[in-house]
Length: 221
Image (tube, rainbow, N blue to C red; front, side, top):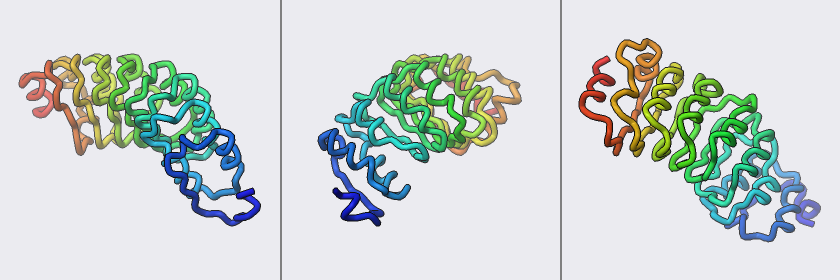
């Protein structure tokens, strides 16, 4: 009915969108809204703990540029894998605080998109496998990467990020990694030096195993 009454709809606000009945939202998905309106709708999902896999897949359309599910803790690996095929145009992914696994993240990054920002803050199931996989999939295009508080990531995973970071990476957040130590950086590595040299911000707060020795090596390269 809404689609018939407002065929030129260009803006749609559904506050607390996840609390609307799924059946009603199914009708919203059919509306002939433009891309800006659709992205407003997707933005309403951020931080909503009521968002489920079913709702995500009901609303998500191909062509989305920003995929921000930070804090949507009910979204599972199954939902993320199913969503992956619709992310061919995505530039920004934020999965902060989700229980995403290395395997689900790999599926999402397997689509041919040019990703510029990947935020994985507090994704506590992610480990070194995910960090290594980033080098093969998207680090060459990333401008921003957050692995903050991904507590399974160790020095080996961070070393892989630095080795494959490339010259596009400007913002790297490694804060709150309890297994990050001095051996995350190998002095004399031209690839690591290129990654570190291109950074504008590097966050290492609360990396308690990283000592003055390691910091001196990083910043005196």
